[in-house]
Structure formats: structure tokens, C-alpha cells
Image 1 (tube, rainbow, N blue to C red):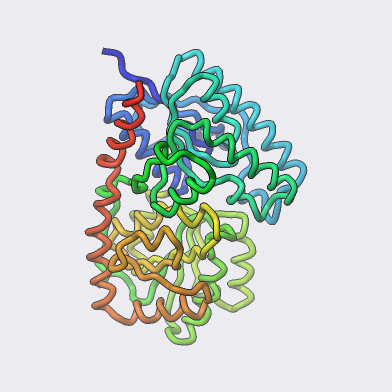
Image 2: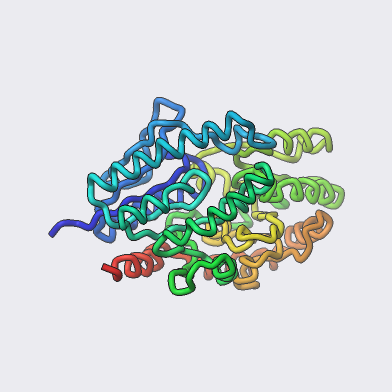
Length: 392
């Protein structure tokens, strides 16, 4: 019996350090485990080492032969050369996807909806490929980086083009409501939690980790609120002078955040690094007791997303502090600490209160481990696959 073929189209870096790349690796492996013949279409990398570690050898990899611009290279805003690079990549990627899906007669696709895949829904419709997309609105992700007139055109285009997807996978009810307001049909919205292989996340006893240690990991962009975290940590140090903060990741604002740390004389207490997911999970999770996810409310579709780092933190049994945004309100409130204001003082107070209370930390760690099973990839991917294949 021939296996069903499915294309997975992800514009992130493979191999890469991000949580999204790690998550898509697990999606690929689970699709293989479910009996699919899997094809990964992703961009070329700017290194001679393009070997992908962590995904099944049964996954066929096709590289888009053009390197797209990355957020960390763009800095404060898109310039003409960036627009041109985006345009060239979209054209080359579109050609590769159209040719690959057409030649191989692939009828199913799983795709991350983002700036580097914004042209693909029309191709799926032309080829009659059944698709499931995930992600946030491109116009929301780029609202601070592109010209207002271009942004207006992009919003109009995106509102129409996303309807070419067969289904859109959202992790929360709040994200589903945003999709509904955009005009996406309710019956084609899949509300299924973001999922990882929770069994692969190591756990380290809190009492074996140095006290008053905090960690942030992920992209360092404006919408992630890392600047709020740095300001809060400055206040915290006045109350707990031996506190340590780890900031792990890359992004267009990393240089600015580093400058702020130096200007505030925090360099001795703030540690920056950019590491692989394996190093993060196995080496760095044992260095900090508490995870802080300072992403403030954006007022758009981003508020409905549940970050992979939150699920990884829960699975690691980490006491985790988050901001009061719609997606976080759908997480059991005994598993995370929710800060009800985006002001640094409020965040600093919660960081202090949690770090000084060992019993409270233990209770949150236990609740986090328990709830993380809700985000197991095997169970949730079965729901997605059943939905996609039921429309034959």
C-alpha cells in the first residue's frame, strides 16, 4: 500500500535554534510515525553544513535555492533592499513549491503562514492541495516594520488569501475569535493546543538550581517584551542583589537590549547567549529556576498565540511568569503566574514574590508538569491528520 504524501513548508532555518524549528521537527517526525511520506520544503542556509539533525531520515528535504532576509538582519525597519530580497525569495519559493507539488502530485500540505509564505495559498488553490496552516497574521507581525500604505494593502490581500487554506490550526479560543473576525469560516478553524514531544524535555529539581535565577529564551523582538523584562530586572536587583537573568536567543533588538543592559550597569547580572535547542534544554534549563515570558498585549492576532517556550517550560516543570494576554488566560491559572500589568514594577514584584517563596515555586512546578500532558504532540497530531484526510 502506497503511503500518502504530505509536504511540510516551513520558512525557518533548518537546522536552527528557534522553538518553532524544534516544534516543526517534531511535527515532521510525528507525520512519519503516522505513516506519511513526508517532504520538507525550506530555505537554503548560509553555511556549508545543511545537515538537519533531529528529524527522521525518511523525510525528504528540498531546499529553496535562495537565502531570505531574517528579522535579526533587518534591524529597525525594512529598507528597499529587504523588499527586493523578500520579493525574489517569494518568487523562487513559489516556483519550487509549485513545481514540487505538481510533479510529485502531492495532495496534502502543512504550512507555516508568515511573511515568507504569503504567496503560497494561491498555489495550493490552483493545484487543489488540501492544506492546514498555522501561525499569525503577517500584517500583525510586520506592523512596526513596514510602510503604513504597504501595510494597508497587505491587510487587504491577506484577509482574502488566507481563505485559500483548507483549514487553519489555532492553539486557543481567543485566536479562533480573531480568525472569525477576519472572515475565516468557523467550520474550517481547528482549535487544537500547540504541541510538542513533552517526554523529551528534561526536568531539573528546583532545589538543585541556584536560587533567584531567571531565564528568557526565544526571539528578541519588540513584541516579545524583553525590554520590559530588563527594566523589571533592574528593579528586582535593588531587592535581590544576587539575582541572575539569562537572555537566550537572537533577534533584531538584541543589540539594543545589550546596550540597555550595559547602560544600566547590569552586565554582571545578565547573561546573553545564543545556543541550539539541545544545549538550551540540557545545559541551560538547569541554570535558572524561573522562566519569564514578558510578551505584552499587542491587540492583534499575536495575542492568541501560545509560544512554544511556554509549553517547553511547563513540560520542564518550571515555575513560569507570563503577561496577561488572551492566550495566557486559557492556561490553567495554577500552572502559571500571570502579571496583570505590563509595567516593569508589576513584573518585578511577581518575580520577587515567586523567587522568595520556595513552597510557591514547588506548587507551580508540579502544576506545570501535570498540565503539560495536554500539549502532547502524538495525541494532538492525530486530530489534525484525521481532519485533513477526512475530506478525500
